[in-house]
Amino acid sequence: MSELTLLLLRIGFLVLMWFFVFAVVYSLRADLFGVRVRKMPQGEAAAASAPPKPAPAAAPAKPRAAPKAKPGGAATTATVSKLVITSGPKAGLEVPLGSEPMSIGRSSESGLVIRDDYTSSHHARLLLWGEQWMLQDLDSTNGTFLNGERVGAPVAVSIGAPIKVGATTFELRT
Image (cartoon, rainbow, N blue to C red; front, top):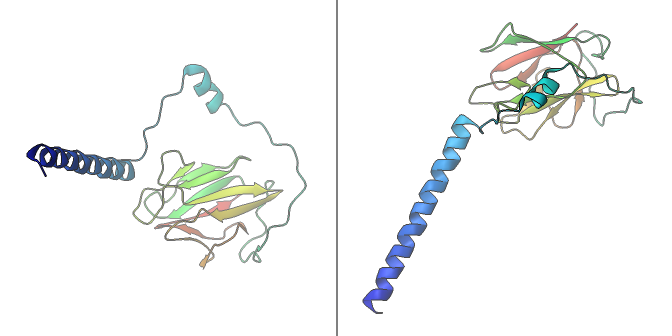
């Protein structure tokens, strides 16, 4: 091979190596610090902070594998008003619940942000299914636990049942 060909190959491999280095650094930065949140224009910010409109009443659907509720009664929209963190870094925090699904995870886009090493960016979701509150694991690495049992499919949540995500435990309350 000629010297020119070898020089071009060396430069090409050097550029390719730097491309991979920058890709790894970008990926690590995004994983450690999260995705940048864009600022909303004033009109959108006011609409986002307004209280949610009530959802139309839907016929209750049956969940696939809803276990029997152990402590308390069934957690319905009429009885549940807040989510309370009972243990973990944010113990004592009360988050009001509306009728919209609440995502749980490390991401700043989550409704309940839990910053620990055992929580995925998008870990779990609490949602209304008819009149019943359901818990859904979003294929997290370390799992989501309800009453000490790992959640696979969406399951019904009862009032006072401990939900564990990472190192944080919380429950639904009236």
